[in-house]
Image 1 (cartoon, one colour):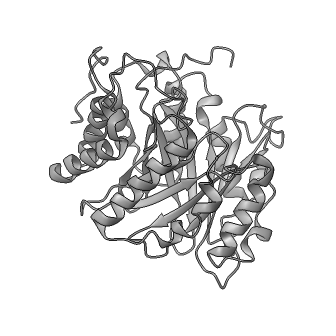
Image 2 (cartoon, rainbow, N blue to C red):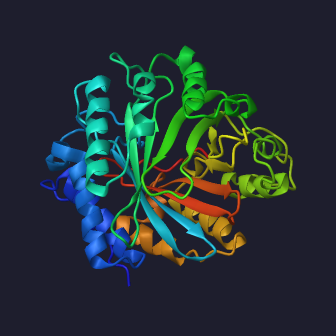
Image 3 (cartoon, rainbow, N blue to C red):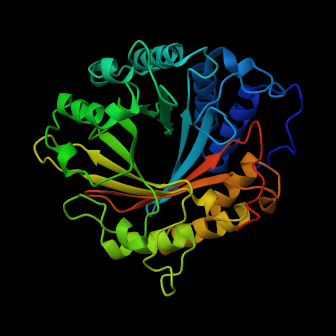
Length: 371
């Protein structure tokens, strides 16, 4: 049985105690070994640094754009047809720093500390430092780190960087140059059109095929449009992408909104992963729907997530346990605990479904009563 989260954080609870407790309960909920669960929690607290000791009753020291309530931590469960889901945590190591430059430098130190601890190279990141971490960075964030937790105790590490660091007008050029430096000279021109370059991500450490990933925003997207966005060879069928789109957004494939664009809310995102420098095309494609903007409350978001998981032949029970591990509030009392639904396709593997979960350390977003 999953141990349910406490009813609410006491005023003396710190950011680290709150998010670390959530991670520990999540790890236990999916059956992670206790030593590995404890080790993963300590890694999170260490990466957050001094801000982990900050009491939650104080307002966030800076506005993290990693989550709606500015908590610098987000969790996710990645499901496959092969067994229990993998647990991931996304964090902002520079949270609380006075400006973006200091934020980014704190993030770099955290990555390099992990590299020394787990003996992996940061060479690919070092090649891009001047592009994404200039002296006077712009944008909404500097550097995020994602950890995919594993039974070995050594997580897989991903770094997320801001294409708009030198200005939004230079975001596309920054992404193009980053891909060129990594040996993917032709990849940029293959990408589909998008309204914004959101993130540039790198796999670091123990990956069979380390990826560089480009994230794009697509405003007012339709199901038909979503089905055209993959640039993989032998990628997902458009019909499969459209089916996921309808299930996640709650649109009716047999109704008037079959081909209509979504309302102008938070945009759907795509991720295009490149691994093979010779191929010149992405080898991975992911579609992300910000489900919290298309449901009235988290009860509806959970139903949509269960529908998506079931259609892909995946057991949804770990998701229910995870929600109980994060919070004891009723799902109808807020929206955003279930933040994104994603379906990922990678060459040579079966699809994965990822559910992104908010910490809600500072605030619960009220239900969308206008929907």
